[in-house]
Length: 395
Image (cartoon, rainbow, N blue to C red; front, side):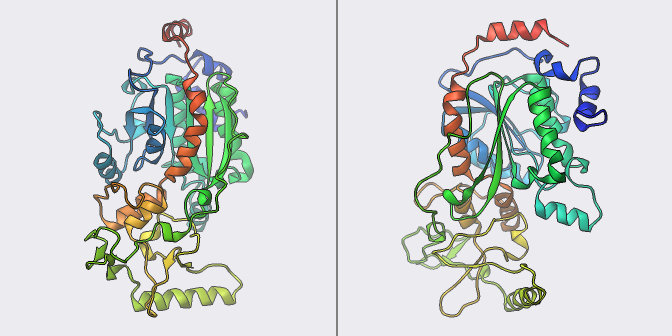
């Protein structure tokens, strides 16, 4: 760890007088330690919760969410519409002290990916703006995760981010993250990049970083991927044949055809084709993506609301292509399945596209949760002893 590293600065600012190497041992949780509540296998907190993708995944293995934090009020609206919580979704995590967070066994966090994504880095470079940890508004939020881990010492955690996190700043960013979690905080850290195409009809690579306070023997190496072929877009598209219940917001007519407003205007379609041709002549790969029911889509991004160009759906009868509806985006991200009670979308299409584009793919997170499940539930440390140890080493 270098003398001026972000990790060291964090330690000096938040744990003055404590050796960085010992923070992982000597941190005291400012509330009483408590086991999981009766009827639940474990408790967790949901940071940078978005619309609750990680939460949905870990609830499937018996977890109970005891605290949620999300700064975007539109995401809060969607989150509140879908989860019957007895707690209020907290806002800006940078303004929430550890004492305000209930006892928990596990921390979940999909901390903001824009400072590390290829698209985000390219945009910030073009605007001559800092990215990664140098992005003061988003890049430093990882250290709020560190603060809470250091103060509360949950048994385990799971973090999710874009694949480019591994290579950002020539690997230095991820090295800082690993050193912080493993060497400074004392967690045993494991990571794996997973492509969502094995679970949903979308190419979407994300890194999952798991950590355990104790030596559980956990490893991502033994996690098996689905052996079936990749799902196709047909599985998430509106059937448009009357077999699906109409949803007035997204469909029209007794056959529940996709509403005409999702078809691209003639002007936009001409622009996208001209733009793609211009870059094709230059030898660039920029352009729209046109897909049919037997295809696997590109990555759904938070900018989808602008023109939908990365995933356009072919239509019959020589019609111009259309965008996905927000309902189809919910299915593409695994929040919805045809025939099940729908995920509530109480916000505008623009906000819905942003939310799904920023979300975690639920079936991927669920697969990770099921792989972690026996190791999460094997933590049977006596909480009284745990509290005594924490008090003994209180800062």
